[in-house]
Length: 380
Ligand SMILES: [Zn+2]
Picture 1 (cartoon, rainbow, N blue to C red):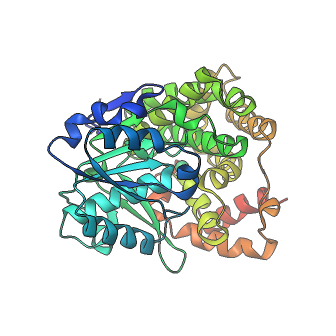
Picture 2 (cartoon, rainbow, N blue to C red; picture 1 turned 135 degrees about the vertical axis):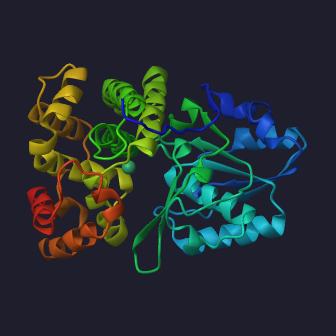
């Protein structure tokens, strides 16, 4: 066996309804602190998803300041505003309760308040050193896996996506409460769920740091997501389906935190940066053409994944099943449906080629021509 590292969050708490007990559940992280800064967005707040956590924290005598200005593809200025408010409040513990954007913002607030580094000094791999403030994350979507990754993705002024990827960004604790996902609309359930499946698929086929533990997590995560996604889309309050989706997304997150994602994500990022297509949907759109392009280099691995899902062991069977699911759950499958024009494709391909931190992980080398062909293949 080759030498490898495997890192993850030190404490996962999994329990449907358990957010209402957060003060007790996360007592070891909160211990000795009195001031909690809770990072979320207005949609999550309006849906009442932070209410039970607030009651629990405040009844334990803790003082909580809620920051709900996070937006999708969080810009760096939102992170800085959150930091200003957290500093003025003298925050001692950071909680991120929401989707990937809220959790990614919370990670950076905890880092920027705890260390002397600036945000621009943290961009890249292994550049953020900490220390950071105590950090607790609780996802409200089953998709990004951000609660178990050391990664935060931020949008800079020009629309470029910058990543901070360093071990201190792992939270002290992640809380998985499937009840927080019951109200997710069908389209978001579908897109974030497919994104989580992409995490598993790309982790399993990554060129760097693939290892037996990430493989096991990718296989189990993909199976749970595959088995539950259509039920979760049909009936959002199906408890079993929601629990499987949430755990599946977290397992896939643990996998790709160690065995990083590749060209599906690299080609998806420009769609988010330029057209503000949600992360999940952009990955769902780019999955089929990238897998078909990769097939000559990764056929046997895609075949293993397909077989694990009970399908014919081949790339074609895996891709066709993913296309069937996207159709079945009713999300967009063509770029022309999301406002992309044909003359945007060269710029998309050019921007995708800049995401070298992910392209290096792709099982087959991605060229500018191939990237363009991938966009073209799902244009209309
Ligand atoms: Zn993703």
